[in-house]
Image (cartoon, rainbow, N blue to C red; front, side, top):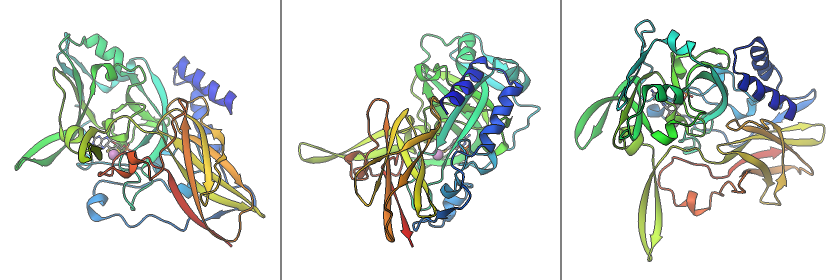
Amino acid sequence: MEARAISRRNLMLAGGATLAGLAFRRLDRLVAAAPLQPGEELVPWLDQRTEMPAPAQARVGQQLVWEELDSWITPNEKFFTVKHFGQPDVDLQAWRLDVAGLVRQPVSLTLDQLKARPRQEVTFTIECSGNHGFSWNGGLVGNATWAGTPLAPLLQEAGILDHGKDVVFYGHDIGKQTVRDMELTAPFARSLSVADAMNPANQLCYEMNGEPLPASHGAPVRLVVPGTYGVANVKWLDRVDVIDTRFAGHFMARDYVTIREEQRDGQPVFTETLVGKSLLKSAPARVTRQGGAYRIVGAAWGAPVAQVEVQVDGGPWMPATIDEGVGSDYAWKLWSVSWPGATPGEHAITSRAIDVAGNVQPAMTDPRIANKRTYWESNGQITRRVSIA
Ligand SMILES: Nc1nc2c(c(=O)[nH]1)N[C@H]1C(S)=C(S)[C@@H](COP(=O)(O)O)O[C@H]1N2
Ligand SMILES: [Mo]
């Protein structure tokens, strides 16, 4: 695994859409990370998602089916989608990416001009920050190899002026929001501080898993910001605008805000913080049986994962083996553990990820999770239930 991860990374550093690169991507899809082996049977989870309510149905497309997770890369046709204002019709002929505002030299690029720039790939697990916030979701996560051109050199060429503070990314999709009794019409937009925008991992992405970026994922170009939740990865990108103050659009400063209750001098106070940077998380994907032997497989992502541990029925934490994703900074790791002595009856299976700095994915009872009053950033430990015959 290690060797494969390293060679994939070398390919990324070499940076071409080489034939070898394409072959690797196909391999990723064909070589299942945790395939069912001959004679191996799935033990279905007892707890399943509830039906999606109508308002969510308008925004959320398909979700990952955890039991079907059998490859490190999520195929495009299985990748979840979220669109707040529906899918816009982008005229690909007329499309230009404008970089404007507080820059010395505004830029306007066609798709061909953008594709002619240096190419960069990153395998990055995107999760919606609302994932696991409701009983109807849990599958709003996927792992893809995104290819595009790095953002930072383009911003450097445009030349951000000294008083430029925030870089705003506007989508082509426009909708209405009510703010202080006013109905406002505005495009979907998010911002990054200049420092965050200059992260060399960020890209203007036009390819997903070796295919042109699909319309549902933001064609022709989306922003990809490794290390963030889905919402920061603006689809159907239209305009990049440098401004001298913090941007406070709906999806930046009103929605996608985490509210927590804290105690100060015995009094409850509420804190409100912006959702952006992704958080350490893991989830059990499935349990399988082969003969009398049981195995638990899952994924871990959101921060550089060092270890994963699994607990059955609140017992001791068992170390899992990382099978896929070693050496990849922003992609999930797929893990597995054998479950010795599985007895007939119902069982609860919980996983927790530990990052390279030693931080442990919080329990549901941890104040960071338990005192949250909004559903965003639900990275508490996930427990699934199975019944053993
Ligand atoms: N322009 C635009 N970009 C967007 C959104 C949107 O509604 N419009 N939704 C965001 C949210 S909330 C998520 S979780 C991700 C989902 O990315 P995907 O649909 O490619 O999986 O896109 C983000 N980018
Ligand atoms: Mo999202």
